Amino acid sequence: MSLLEGKLLSRSYGPVQALDRVSFTLEPGEILGVAGESGCGKSTLLRLISGLEPPDTGKLLLRGQALPARRSRDQLRAVQLIFQDAAGSFHPRRRIADSIQDSVRSLLGRDSRADIPALCALVGLDPALARRYPREISGGQCQRFAIARAMAVEPEVLLCDEITSALDTVSQAQIAELLRSLCRRRRMATVFVSHDLALVSGLCSHLLVMRQGRVVEEGPPDRLVSAPCHPYTRRLISSVLELQ
Image 1 (tube, helix red, strand yellow):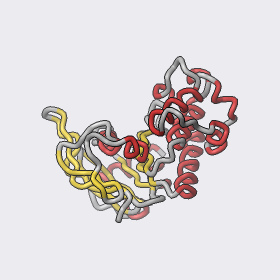
Image 2 (tube, rainbow, N blue to C red; image 1 turned 60 degrees about the horizontal axis):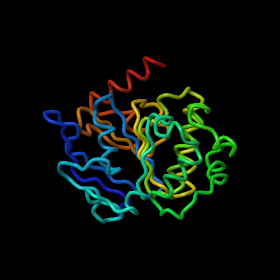
Image 3 (cartoon, rainbow, N blue to C red; image 1 turned 120 degrees about the horizontal axis):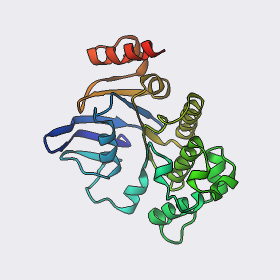
């Protein structure tokens, strides 16, 4: 039994078919990459998995049990979403530590409290930074705190929506290594969405290539990069090589 499974997920917004019969499986400790150009359906897929929106058709299974449109607190805790704009995901007038505590109380109960120093150690940050406001720390630090906030409720699945796109190359590599380490140590599954095929290929064990709401090709990243079958995958790889 897979930890998380999506079966023929579809979602439309008026005449726009944002997601068209997308299926996937995710095992504990696995990092699943989803790559494609803007508007291909990557973020829509994450919104469905996280429960922010329901699919029009298809279903999601967590440990073999169907995830309903209205999820329980434990189901929401089990699947955590990290946004591209880390600073924007924190309340601008609350200190980082307070925002993390708000999230923990919301998902684990009002008497629950996060161990802020332990969370800071987990993501490689000085605990003193948690007393600052989002505007007072760097983008890379803020993204690490976003990961810490998600980890505070011990999720089984972590969803990462373009979380490295606003960072410099060094910070991107550091965040990718942090995610790899957390997945390995916690046996946590991750869906990592990015338009950066090179980054996804180096981080993930399985890759979905999406175009216009559909999965056009999938498989191990090494195989997709060295011997792509679909013309769109070949164009993505060519664009990465041209940039390099």
